[in-house]
Every structure is written in C-alpha cells, then in structure tokens.
Amino acid sequence: MLIRRERATDIDAIREVIAAAFTKPGQAAGSGTVEALLVDRLRADDAWLPELSLVATDGEGRVTGHVLATRGHVGETPVLAIGPLAVAPGHQRSGVGKALMHTALGACDALGAPLVILLGDPRYYERFGFRLAEEYGITPAVPEWRPYFQVRTLSGYDPADPALRGAFAYAAPFDDVRAA
Image (cartoon, rainbow, N blue to C red; front, side, top):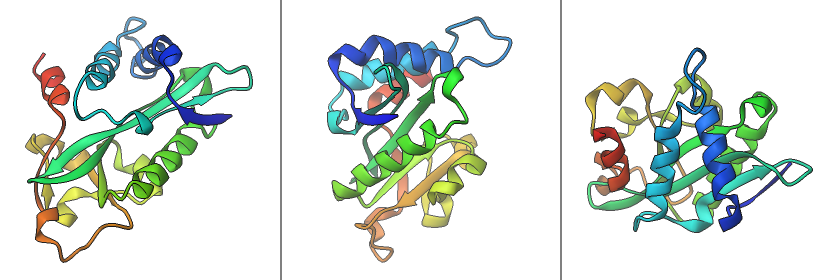
C-alpha cells in the first residue's frame, strides 16, 4: 500500500471508492454518492487544500481509499476538518483507513493546525486520539451531531486559547450538501 496526494487522474476512482464505501447494505449500488458529491464540491471551494487530499493505492496503483482535510473554523479561528474517510469495500478492515488517518493527521500537524474536527463513530476514531468536541468547548452546527462530533488536538493546540472554543463551521459545501 502507498499513501500519496491525490492526482487529477485519480478523481473518477476516488468518486467510485467513496460511493461504494458509503453505500450501506441493502441500498442500491452507488447510494453513497452524496459524500462523493461533497468531495467534488470541496475541490471547487476555497476550503480545499490539495496537499491534504490523500489516496491509498494497492500494488497495482489502484485507488483503494481516500481521505481529505479542508478548512473550517472555530469561531473566527482557522482549523481543519477531516472527512470523509472512505475505503473500498474489498479493502476495509485491512489497515487502509488506519494508514490514511495517521498520514492525514501527520500532514495536518505539519501544517501547524491546532486541531482537526470530524463527524464519525467515536468507537472507531478514539484510536486516533479523537474525543468528543464538547470536552474542548466546541459545538457543532447541528445539535444532533454532538455524540459523533469529535476533536483531535495537534502540536499547535493551546488549551488556554479562548479562540479555540465555540461554534464550529464546516466549509460551505458541507452545508450545501446537508441542505440538498
């Protein structure tokens, strides 16, 4: 497995991986296209950070997973949001997601971000050091997200900084997709 930055030639494969990964059992194939649409819209937004759109490839060079981090804000303070994290169904539970997440967290830290935020299953993400955002005084845009809304602090985090507490805002494409 190799983790590297996304290339323009990967975009179709990334869409396929995301759609397959987010299609739940019993749903029609490709039902996870909302998440794929989100990634496409993020690529066209100012929140997009190309250096934080990462793919996992197999020995043949095929894309088997994808993760990205984009700009977000706690109040007026810039932070990063990770997600979606997607692994092709045939490669799940093989370490691809873990490798992508560790690489993304390292890249976010190297860029000096104070923290990253994500929305996901706490049982999965706690292994990467994520904790519920409310423990840090950060609230989601949608109150129902609280049990899944998580923070991972990075080297640049200062717990005494009041600017790192308050309401979190994702990039506009997240709101656009949620409203659709």
